[in-house]
Image (tube, rainbow, N blue to C red):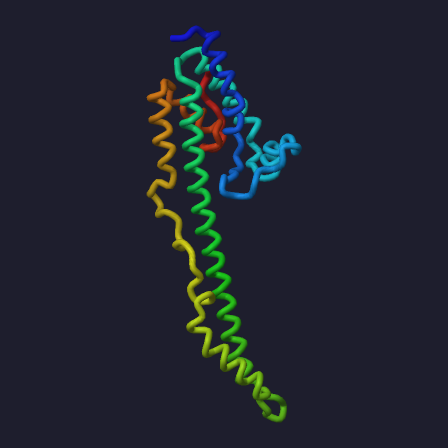
Length: 215
């Protein structure tokens, strides 16, 4: 095993990458380009605007866990960081898939609402009569009949394209990457389960919870 000074130096080289893992917002590579280089501190600003408000707590957990790794393990910080980055990338894709499901569910709900309003409005208009029992003028009457004729077959208002309406069933794991990350961290030399959990918390893969363990 390396001596503590060597381990500390090794972990220090990876400190910036570990710090980036503590951000809770997600930026997809295929999304908009990153802010310009002159916009210093953009990640902190994004975290402040879009994060969960637990960034400082995750950094504290990260620092404590790294200190333990330096003292108690010979784990390679590059391997540990790569494991967490891979898990976070998968977490981002899972989150994106869930957001798409929510978006299309809302889209379908709105389409059904529009369809119902159009149908009810057109039907009511065709039944409407003035005081002297005159119906709508022919143009409006024809437009309402056209609406009622087209509504059943309109693809957007009847079945907007997109993923299924539901997320995974209760009891079905939506986060298999957590188990894989735990196993990989153990294999990499992070021997204590509590510290594997802390690394997952520090990487925003698990919620920040009160820490009962005495260091």
